[in-house]
Image 1 (cartoon, rainbow, N blue to C red):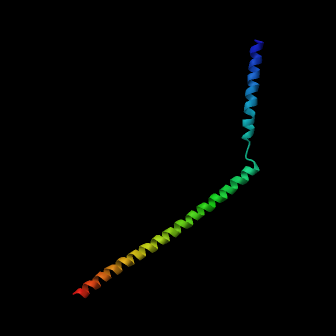
Image 2 (image 1 turned 45 degrees about the horizontal axis):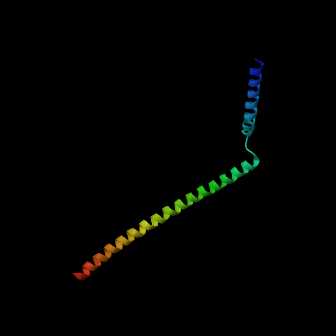
Length: 88
């Protein structure tokens, strides 16, 4: 019986020693990790802002292209009508 209790006690102590660093490691975030996280957050926010700006610029360019395409189409129609009138 003594052997079983001693073995069990050694097993429990071994488990406690194995689990203790894991529990202690989950205590929080170090200041260097926190500063790295803040730097990453800042970079992410800057990138997201850049995406918003580029999407707005793209929308403006697409609107400009649509306007120019409409103008081109109207000019082609006018040219075709002028050629038709000159031929008659």
